[in-house]
Amino acid sequence: MMEILVLTGVLVIGAALIIIAVRQMNQSRAISERLDQYTDVSLSLEELELQQPFRERVLIPMFRALLSYLGRFGLKQNQERLRANLQMAGNPGNISPNMFIGLRMALALTLATVIVPLVIGRLSLIQALAGVAIAFMIGYILPGIWLDRKIKERKKNILKALPDALDLLCISVEAGLAFDLALQRVAQKWDNELSHEFQRVLQDIRLGRTRREALRDMAARTGVEDVQTFVSAVIQADQLGVSMSKILRIQSDQLRTRRRQRAEEAAQKAPVKMLIPMVFLIFPALFVVILGPAVPRIMSALGVMNSGMGN
Image (cartoon, rainbow, N blue to C red):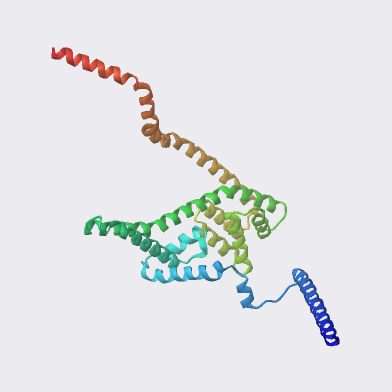
């Protein structure tokens, strides 16, 4: 009986010590987690990589590597032009020209593979080959169409934001700020394509490039005529020592005049563009509503006339 009591006491004491130790560990862990929120914890490269989602760690690198591999088998013509087009589109997905060619090849092969079971056994051999070739060409052309749309959309956004950005830039320069500081204020004011370009210009200047080179690169990346005119005026004013505020005021007024002229041009084109849907969609419906009830009467009258002439 004594041995049972001693064994029971030892077990109870051991269980109590284990519970106390676990609670202390949980408390210390909670304290360390709270401290980690307010202190910088040095993590290894492996830990930093494991904190990223599985999609960014595995799927995206595999997809990019596959596109780069497929890009070796595509056409290698006009690499510089393709690189310039990707820059004017804002480098969507941060893809290289080789990866874009791989994207074309991947989409073309996918469409050709999908169309093969649909045409084999249902069409003749020549028709099946023609269908597969057409699907391959469509898949190869679609990324180019998507890139052109991205370029047009980005140019439109830059044109829309440029007059307001120049107004703020002019006001900041007239208030006494230097051109670089005024450019930084404009870049911090908005979050659009033009502000991103201004931020890149400032970054290039911090890396040691001259203002002239950074601005010319921005004009080449955007591909917008108004931005090129603005950059040329700023570079000329910097070279000749002309007041920057006057140049910016003149550029702002000119850009607003051009915006109004583009709006008037679009308004003049609207009636011509409305003519096609009116002729093919609205007028037939009106003819059906107006002349529809009269058609039976005309047909019956023509039938009576034909019968009278026969008699």
